[in-house]
Length: 273
Ligand code: GTP
Ligand code: MG
Image (tube, rainbow, N blue to C red; front, side):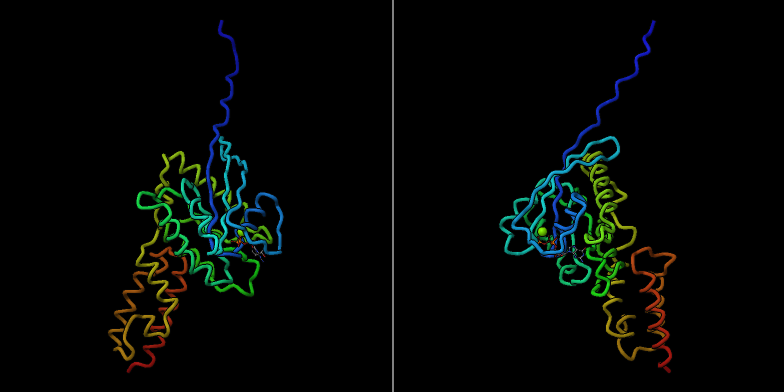
């Protein structure tokens, strides 16, 4: 007779991961981590000296994840201390302050620093990046809007979250999605799952939206010389309309860019005989 013995439940498969925080000084890296791990916010600025290290455990599906967090100092002074911590990282939290344009513009140089420290044989393709647009509670000082931040992040295949360490908004969702993506990566043989790997819009679309945002007048926006003819304006308009039409383009900010192009064309045609 077969004994009806219940099957022993497999122990949860455990996993160790390493994540690091990156971004300019004072953008709120340490506060984001503190908000998640200790559920509190410290308003006094206590600069991280070199690096802070902590361990936390989280559950993702059936797996217990031991997370080693290396919280880096953003100040250039600490470069020599933090540069050795880039290796063997599965996840990067890349933070900027939505009220400090410099901290947004610096994101590329943070990626460059990491790339340099990983050396010619290191790869950043197999690392999950989450961009945190932090301090969204400071609405009065905001100068980088959501579509600009999202466009930068998503055109690189990075996750993007709007966060406030002060109010806690977006913090749990950001960490949860970040950890799930890292576990997906580990289960996918260390490769970023293809869905996360590439943006759902082209580089040309992203670059065009950025160019339109930064254009100085309607001629510049359409990419024609001042004093161009009706035909030239219409030709340039049609090209941009095909590229940015909201039915065809899902890049963040495409709708506003499309509207701006329509308005620029209308304004120019009014004054061209
Ligand atoms: P370094 O360690 O020097 O690289 O800075 P950091 O990026 O770790 O910044 P930290 O977390 O220490 O925060 C810097 C300052 O910003 C502190 O005064 C925080 O109280 C404040 N701060 C952080 N996050 C937020 C936020 O979401 N909203 C507001 N209003 N202030 C924040
Ligand atoms: Mg810090």
